[in-house]
Length: 553
Image (cartoon, rainbow, N blue to C red):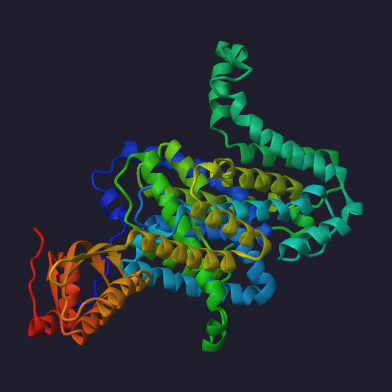
C-alpha cells in the first residue's frame, strides 16, 4: 500500500475563534482593530516610500494582506502587512529588476510559501540559527536608517542607489542641499516618538498634573493614542501652517488615489520566473521567518492558543500571491502591529479584519489629506522603527557567546549591510551548516583497545556521519597493522546515529578485517543504526561471515 504525501489540513484559526463568540469579545476586537488601523496608516506609507514605491502600494498591501491573513491564517491575533524588514529587499529588487518583476517575484514567493505550509514545512523555519536572525535583523535596521537620511536631511537626490557604499557616496555628494526645516521636523518626530509614551506613563514627569480630576480623562485618551499617528498629524499641521519648504507626499508622488486599486495581472513567463529565482527565494524565506517569529511573539504576549505554523504560511502565501494583482508589495507578520493588537485587547482574528476594514475606509475617505504629509516626518518614524527593530544589546553580549555564534552573527550582519540579505542568508546558512558539522565531528570518537588473543575492541561514541567518518581510519589502520586473523568487536552502545557515509566507513573496516582473515562482531546496536544497517543489507553481509549482536534496551 502506497503512502500518500503528508499535507497540512487547511483550517483557518478564525473558525475555531468564532466558537462561543459574543458581543463582548466583538467590542474588544472592534477597539483593537481600529487602534491597529491607525497605527498601520503611517507605517504602511513610510514602508512603501522607503522601498521605492508609491505610498498607496503600502496602504493597499496592509489592507489586502491584513484581511486575507486574518481570514485564513493560523494565529488568533497576528496582523500582516508591509514590514520594515522588506524595505531593503524590495528597494534592491526594484532597482535591479524593475517594478513589474517585483510583482512577479512577490506572487511566486506567495506560491512557494503556500507549498511550504501545505507540505508541513513551517517548523523548518525554527531551525534557522538565532545568530543569523539577529545578524540580518540588525543589518536591515542599519540599512533602513541609512535609506532615510535623504528625506530626514532634506537632500535633493532624485534616486538613491541600492547598495550601501553607493548610498553613502550619494549622501556625501549632496550634503550641500541640506534642508534645516526637514531636519527639524524629522528630529522633532523622533523626539516625540521617544517622549510620548513617557509623558503618559506611570512614571511621567507630568504625574502631579495628570492626577487632577480634570486631567484624568485626557491622560487616558492620550495614553491610547499611538505615537506615530500623533507625530504624523501634529507635524503635518505644523508644516502646513508655517508653509515650510519641505518635500511632501504630494510634491513627490502627486498624492494618493482616492478609490479602489486597479486589478492588473502581471505578465508571467517561464523565462521571467527563472530569472527571478533569487529574489523569489529571498522574499519567501524572509517572509516565512518574520511571519513565524511574529506569531511566536504573539503566542507569548497574548496567552491564547498557539498558532499553527503551516496554516500561517499558507495564508501568507495566498496574501502574497493576491497582493501583486493590485500593485502591492511583499507582506508578512508585523511584530509592532501585532503587539499593539494584543495590548489593545484583541481576542480573535476578527480584530485583524476590523483593522483592514477601518484602514480601507480611511484611505477611501481621507486620501487627499495625505498630500501635505512631509517626507521628513515619515523618515523620522522609520528611524524610530529601525532603532526599535535592531537588537543592539546583542553586540555587547557577544563576549558571552561561543566563537561560532560570533562568526555567524557578525558575518551575517556585515554581509547584509555591505552586500544584501540574499548573500547574507545564503552564506550564513552554509556557514552554520559547516560549523555544525565541525561541532558534531568533535563529538564523535573511536576508542581502540587491543586485548589478548588477537581481540581488537572498538567503542564508538556519538554520531557516525559524513563529517566524522574519517575518524574510523585509525581503526582500519589498527586492523591492517595488527596481528593476522583478528577478532574485531565493535561496541555500538553509545553510537546514537549512523548515516550512509558512516555505513560505508564501517564497510571499509569490515573489508580490512576480511582481508586479514578475521571477523567483525557488533554489540549493543541502538535502533537507528540497526535500521540503517538492515535497510542497506549490512546486517546480512555480517551474518554470512560472523555476527553477534544485541539491541540495547
